[in-house]
Image 1 (spheres, rainbow, N blue to C red):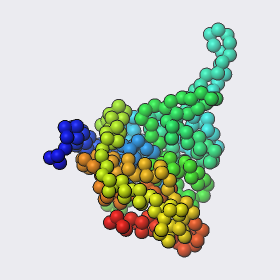
Image 2: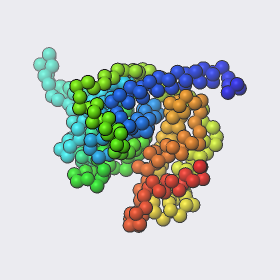
Image 3: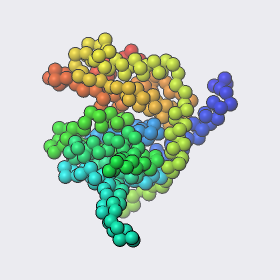
Length: 332
């Protein structure tokens, strides 16, 4: 580190300062969310990288509570949409209403929907129809929506935290592939262990629940996201990301598992997501640049929702997780 330039030293100082702040932030979230350290870290990495997260798990695992807590500690305006089969796109984006002005003439006035927030909680997103799910596509990718031909910018920063029930539960719709690709990470939320569940029982059923406070605000988060993009990435880490993502595509892979058992693999957006995520992880850890270990630890949540198994893979009980594990072997 003694060879760092003055600007690099300043960047490192900023990384260390933000790392300490996010460590405090994680502790604050831990007052409300118990025993989910990996889920919390992956969610923070997603937000730091400027992306959106898809939280998957059965009901009752504090997915909604995590989003609400995150909105408080990050100091973001937060809104929640409960997705249901009868939810319409206008319920998300907003709609125009015809009203009479002071001059007596009628004109259309746009009423903004809940998507106009800094942190949008899309609860049980796969309960709604594909048409309604796709209403979020432009918002997630372009940070704006178009109503009656007029574009409207969304607040900055803008993040979607969507929760999803497992697909095999009754009354759910699989998300369209194009929308899945907009999520930087798919974060699996599992059951708590015995000690954690004991703590949940004791602390969430009393009259003395812990109070949490804002640690950051929107402007500070934007500066942190800009710093993430300034973090340098070494050539061997970039090469590892390119090799991994390209090896997961049936068209360009020389791995028999991929060519035989995948119908499609991750596109360039997966590479972009991975390089941003490893930078964000380095910042959280207070390091100047990411490592191969960061690529290995984040490959699964970034790639698995961007890969589709063939029918023969399902017949042989082969999973995407298994294929990704095999593809990571050369990096270990």
